[in-house]
Amino acid sequence: MKNKVGIPARGNDFFKRESEVQKILLRLADGNNLQITAPRRVGKTSILWYLRDNKMNGYAYVYIDTEAIYDTDDFFKKLLKAIVACPEVHQSTKLKDLFSKGVKAFSKIKSIKIMGNGFDVVENNEQNSYYEDLFNLLSGIVLDNSEKLIILIDEFPQTIQNIVEVSNGNEIIAKRFLQLNRDLRLNPDINERVNFIYTGSIGLNYTVASINSTAFVNDLSSVEINALSNAEAEILLLELLTNKQITIEESAKNLLLKKLEWLIPFHIQLAVQELTGLVYADKHIGIKHIDLVFDKMVEARNNNHFEHYYSRLKSQLKGNAFNYADELLQKLANEGAITKPQIFDLSVKYNQEQSYRQIIEILLYDGYINNVGDANIYRFNSPIVRMWWQKFICKN
Ligand SMILES: Nc1ncnc2c1ncn2[C@@H]1O[C@H](COP(=O)(O)OP(=O)(O)O)[C@@H](O)[C@H]1O
Ligand SMILES: [Mg+2]
Image 1 (cartoon, helix red, strand yellow):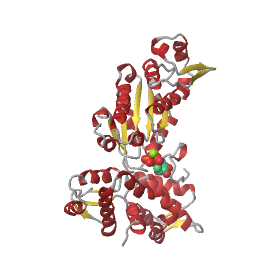
Image 2: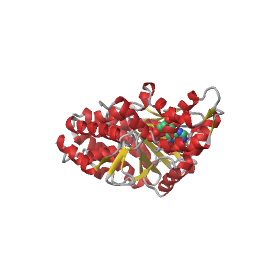
Image 3: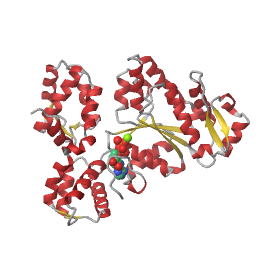
Image 4: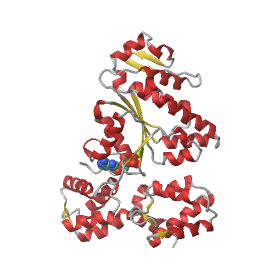
């Protein structure tokens, strides 16, 4: 297992997340459409790739990242292209046969043509037609060896935000977009053989709530991806170290996991990367290295791994809502904990009495803070993120 820091894990580098993967597969087997929820960097994209690469449960999977899409037609065009390019669709002789005979809804499809051994998408300027073609394709789709097609849509909430942004805040276009997606996945002909999994780095529930559109996604079944258990984190840590022929003292290992606290694979990878540098010569990790490694992890050269926490807040929260979250997190970074009454008091300073609960929800959902253990006390989710905040964000 190699230590690739920051890019979705794949193949042998993917640490098996048995319970998460099984949870997803069971829900799919029941015909559910899903949303995978977890803060940034917990491993959502890696899990989607794992499902696809291993054709889990014998399904066919299509992965699409829609982060850079700002338009409804472009979205459905990209979906259509990815679906006809996926090998199980491209090579389906049954589908080709039905298609060439114009059987079922296929006769209405304008933008897909049979080309050589497979299908291709051709340009079509009629409005809505990619959506209709996709609808017709999915409602008649047959694959040779897979009973189901699973469409994995990554960064979907970002697409919704993009659509709102380019329509200058006009929510109607985004609502129609969400409605079309819902119609697609709930159509009985489609739903039998095609399921969707949506995920993204920003919360879908928060994104749709902000445009009063919760009803358009309330059919989705949520699967939460958590951090690793202590036992899993230990296995991952040892696998990464073994690969580098590095050994670690039992006490150092326990201390590292304890200090990391939020055991997402990413933070373990980052620790291993920095430890590797520290023990370059004797390849053995002791307690003294653990004390050093946390400072290394938050050195400026690693800023690219943490800056998104701050820039995200800036783009998502405006004016006093941002100022509120900014002061709150600085206070939390400096003091370690903040109580519910303090959170409310601070909201008064920035006139956020009406909306501070929603801001706290975002901070919880997006993995900045938690109140595990005592519902009245909030803390940083990750001590590393807290350290980074103190070093680069806190003004005093
Ligand atoms: N199961 C896993 N095994 C190994 N590394 C992982 C795993 N899940 C996540 N990671 C690592 O964590 C980081 C973020 O993973 P990614 O899948 O992109 O998260 P997300 O999509 O939730 O932001 C990457 O460096 C990736 O290698
Ligand atoms: Mg991702």
